[in-house]
Length: 262
Image 1: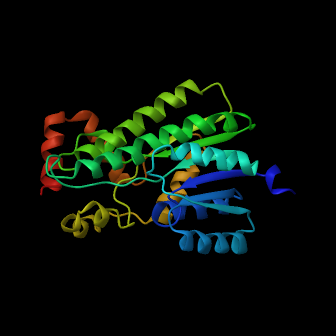
Image 2: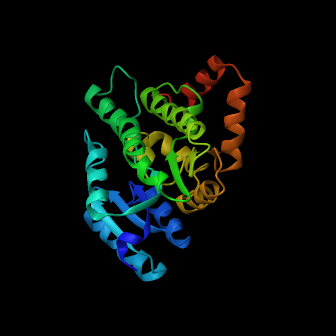
Image 3: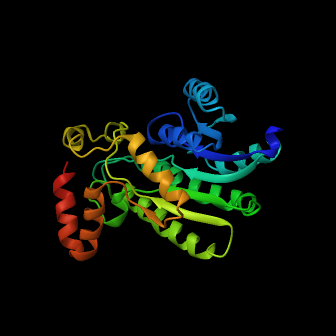
């Protein structure tokens, strides 16, 4: 079969961590893949493994997903290649830890662009392609931090709240179409997130609650294929989300500030 006649799933941030695990899980479900990230070596290695082990077709796009107008570049790549798309996994994102006024404004704005603008752009530009398929999926990766304000992770938690709200609204708008939209909200995952965010002091405690990325990816893809609105891996994380709905916002914020204190 000509590659252009096959359907592909796009995975952003696919070179490592949760994105890599999601790509592997999709390959297990016989999805052909387009993998996006900045690291060419890691993407090439993953492509080799997936094509050899799971016999799926894999293409890669080496790209900085935090750049302005990156969604247009991805869209042009897909159109030029003539690929059909039946799944969009918006996984790429990162966090910054610290007082809002002490963190670099440029870095925080960069985080906003990746965590919100890129997802919005990719959903908007690729949706027409997804709608052409008999059945297709959008999976946006948020966080349990989306369910409350988190002092010292103020902008990060706000970007993830955006992802959650945007995903639910988009799901409602597309409910009578072929596209199912889901939001994945994991808690701590053993991916090196805490280190990149500057949360080295917290990382020791996080290890007690960390889920492994392969485990989260399996739950994520199962939930996506079952067309669930919100996918929250892990019993502890589910309990914490429901607790946020029952307890006062000020109490939750005080608790969060104590956990993530500088």
